[in-house]
Amino acid sequence: MTLLMTDLDNTLIDRDAGFRTGLLALLADRGAPAGHADWIMAVDDRGYTPRPVVAEAILDRLDLGLGEGDLIQALLRCSQDNARLAPETAAALDRARAAGHRVVIVTNGPVANQTAKIRNAGLDRHVDAAIVSEAVGADKPEPAIFHAAAAAVDGSLEDAWMIGDRDDADILGAHRLGVPSVWLHLGREWARADYRPTHTAGSIVEAIDHVVNA
Image (cartoon, rainbow, N blue to C red; front, side):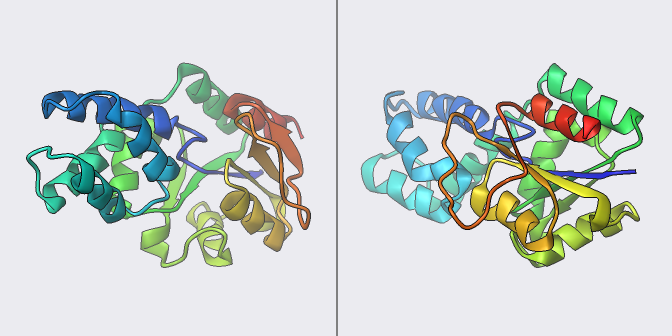
């Protein structure tokens, strides 16, 4: 049995596409031009900018008729409510589990936010467990979150793989633990000189199938 650990945002789901969809709806609902979405997406930085910082940037430039707290909640809902699982990704996850692999989502972020995305995307029906950094008290690339993933399915990191799009979280964490990894390049070039992923893939389906067939 192989432990297949995988990131959530921009790996299993296209988090950025979902956030943009929700953001465009929010702007339209508040009577703001859709053109503001581009700079907000830049501030958002693929979800890695804290929500209060994104909200403050928006409030400095736009009057959406929302206070900071309500705007933060609206931003969270943008990604939560629009989390979608592609059918081909679901099928790849099902193939991995049918082949005897245990699949565990390993994601940084608040429990409520990440759990809502997993549930709304329907991912809970295609994985064995999900580990969220807030619940563990450790973010990727810290070892504790990966050990928690293995413990969740009574597995071992000795026969594990890690899939993800972040060099500084997913791949670095795997590298430090000696765990093989697959990096989703998403059109980017690998820039690190001190470590590298075991394999590079252009899609999550390709990445999962590589692990299954390794």
